[in-house]
Image 1 (cartoon, rainbow, N blue to C red):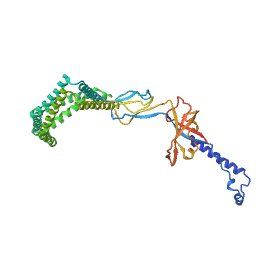
Image 2 (image 1 turned 120 degrees about the vertical axis):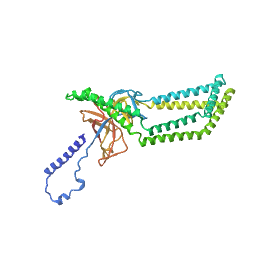
Image 3 (image 1 turned 135 degrees about the horizontal axis):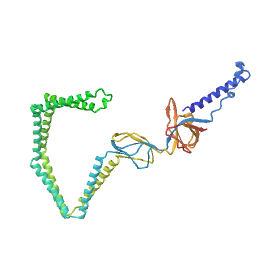
Length: 431
């Protein structure tokens, strides 16, 4: 926008023109230097200051926001289009949330279980409570029995044996049957490719050959042939040193897991025995009625479960982007399937506008205060004039092209349906 520069140029031209006119009409144009020196500095003519301040500005919404989701994820739904009008609280974008939904369901189940447990304790010893406590005893006893039977040791030993067998197969290489099957697959693929080539050659001269099914069939047959050839070559080449090294590493890993399991067995047995004693003591407490300490612990479990559910619900809510205020979607930067990171859309109230100045200098800002009247014209609407009032002046100036500029925010007295975000404006302040 050239409005401010144009006005400055007009003023400068007026000053130069006035000076030239005075030089041509004043008597004594060629008076002596001594006579000119008799004129006191106080008597020299100073051009009158411009009684107006004119600066540039931009039209912006009174309320706008670049909205982001609080978590990163893949977009499942975009529920608005660019330019759509939305209400406060309306869901705009929704991420894939299967994990968060499962967490909410799990937390709800934990809360239900903790609540039911507290209710049972408060109701006193019932046959169902006794049965539940006995079930816990039985479960602890079963775990101890399983450890004592060394079932997990046998499973680890089986894992070692499987890893060793896999290593042996790699070292032996491909069998004759595997090579025969691979050669047959290659021959079949070669025949299919030859057949597709023959069909392609019949129509190769047609102008639309690239879009014909014969072209696609030849490409698919060639790919199948290349895959079969690679498979045969891989079998003939046998296992690479890296494959064998990997298999040996898996054997070593399985053996290490077996040794670790054996080393941990005494501790696991001790823990299982302790769990059995604890569940037995709990069963006795249930049969004898809940103690105050048990009720307090159950109450704490409920509180913890409620907190966990609230946390899971918050995590689920964070997969939805909702409108913080009513407005229009000015810009949409996301689509279904994309990864949401950073601002995904810009929301603004496009019914209420203000103008923010862009080049109000430090020499001009001193003559403007909050509440000052302003006149605004837009480059796009030169025939229209808008009244305005300075709402505030930002305290921090910004350096622009070697000068310090301040931003004055002007509220318009009226609006116009033709106004658009970032339209350039000329703002005039009366000193």
